[in-house]
Length: 244
Image (cartoon, rainbow, N blue to C red; front, side, top):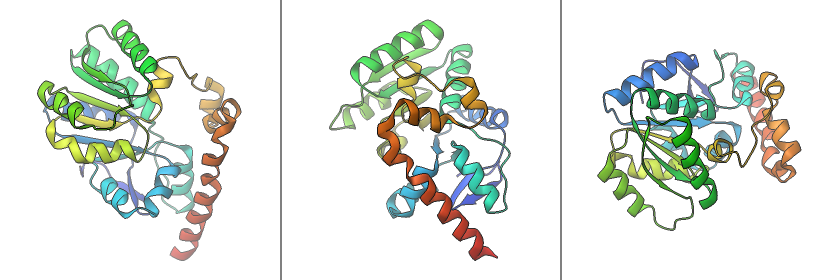
């Protein structure tokens, strides 16, 4: 785990406490120096999953950076009396790194999503980031990651973005990161948004930290997953009460 940023623990998950700008500067420097880097962008769902899965908690503990992806993380930190500087979302981090990679003529490897989504992601990246070389792509429908890992090892890209959802993406990164000394980052459903298959919440919802509500309105099937939020806040409040 990298030590340049202070950490704030929310239910035993150590989040970096910094700005998006400072974080990106640190990550870009590590990529430039071919330092093996594992980023986890964590939300309340990930925290609650880790509480019940020790092996996943161990994977998180071995990541270089865990960023506060959801507003629920900032709320949790505030309840615990350790407020965070700002939210650092996985989607914005990925976009910023793609833009920087384009400026610096870096290489990227993209894994995840449906075949039609990854095909459209490839087109969007080629169009929007013409100087960024796509070393390889693969959809998320694989039964064995080893051949993909071998291709990544052969091509040694600067950045690997894995969009297969938690906990799988973090488990795969933990198992295979030693095969390429670049950036490894799980990006969940980001390819669906980047490709245009899923719309990102309008700016109003983003600015008012209501992206979760917009997603619930547009994808009612997410309700079951969203139910983790009240459980998470209840657990945080209990932890805060026990600290007193």
